[in-house]
Image 1 (cartoon, rainbow, N blue to C red):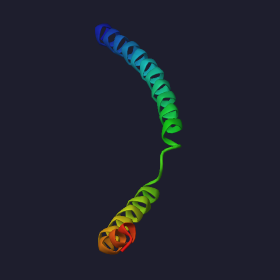
Image 2: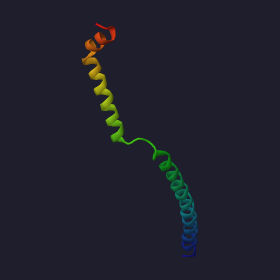
Image 3: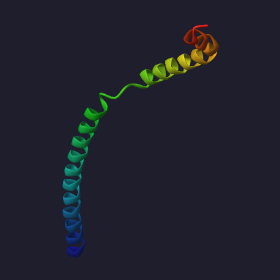
Image 4: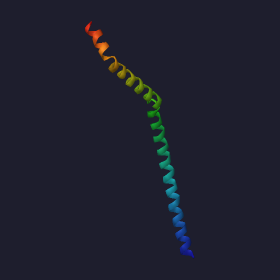
Length: 77
């Protein structure tokens, strides 16, 4: 019985150390996540990227559609 209690106490000590280590690791993870959020806050949103890409594609399509007229205006004739 004494042996079993001794093993349980040793296991409890190991668990206590592991929990302490996990708490330290979680503090580190939280601080890293906070720094990551600060770095990501200034990036453009998905909506902005989709809108900008749509405008760029539309402008390119318009230039391609009116290429003959644009070329005539540039060449003066």
